[in-house]
Length: 132
Image (tube, rainbow, N blue to C red; front, side, top):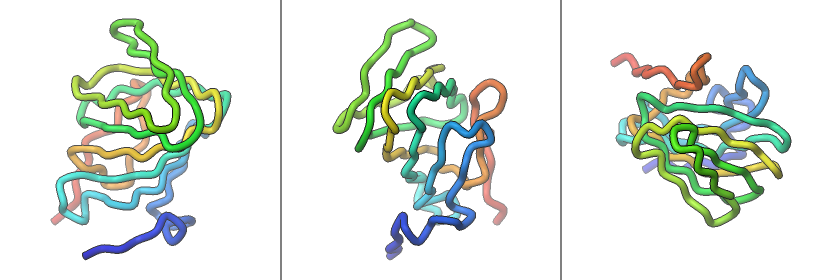
């Protein structure tokens, strides 16, 4: 059994800040736990825009605080995401988040991330693995 708090992750290698400066993420469950998914608390900052494409992962996101506009870049359809709203990127959709109010969310990734990932120039997380 693993019991871990977001507070104890602050300032460790599990507390990742993006190179772009638009978000930070506390990775509470990672690939090294070998449970088949990773779990993160991520905060995206008000007034920022982040374009992403999880070509190598499926991501589910639940908003717990704030507000964002989610745009599917393939269809042009936009959604308002507020607390209690979930979105699932089950088709590897290219998407953009425009943050209206600091946006705190819980994210689940499959395959799990290692904690070292950041978005590349295409908004993609590379598919990294843990050495055995």
